[in-house]
Length: 289
Image 1: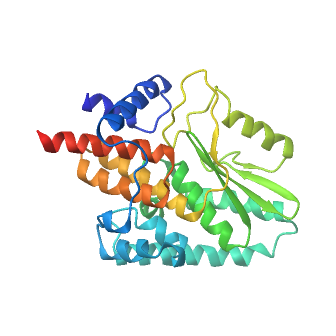
Image 2 (image 1 turned 90 degrees about the vertical axis):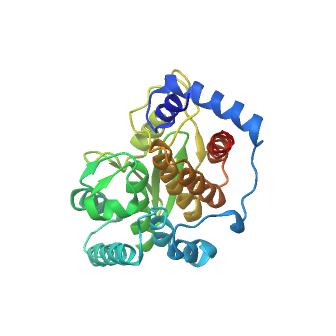
């Protein structure tokens, strides 16, 4: 059962697996732990002093720091390298901002320049730190990167979380623009009609293979928006969530539990709560054998 579950929990678009996934979660969580238990700071197991320093006071931390420390391999040196890369790129974009006649022209240039220079190839389950170093990205890390730049460039950004994906909308004056971070060819959408159609597509039963977050919908069912105004803390929670899935798939159950606890601490959503209950239940099962 454990081997089958590891396959099912992977963040892919095989909807036939999702029903079995949530049945397993429901039965295990109900039997062992119940739902929605709170997580306190004292309950967390930190993998480094850097991570602890960041999570102890999340409100005062730069968003980049919150997102980087989800990766257990990030130390001060790697964090500093990512920060230096980010700041150099941000300075370039800030310099370019005034050279364009309209917000639309700049945002279009910005979207495709980031993809061309920083987002090289799609690879599920990468961390943001690895993305800075290799250019490999998935929907969560790429959207996180765009969010970082856009907020520092002074834009109002709405992060939208559906039950299987994440994207963002940028507000500039009386205009809105949609960024689909996994599409390097046509991911910048400026037309109101096209934005409307794209969002219908996200919520339709005929979805693209863009899964970046596990879903509880099945084939033929409509998707739905879970949160259309994700905060930086909740975004960090989703990054921890993906790292927990990576650890689970690698059969490192203790690490997966520690990561999903921190994910739930940052973002106590039903999705994360269900997975956390399952992970902890399986951990207790193995410990009792």
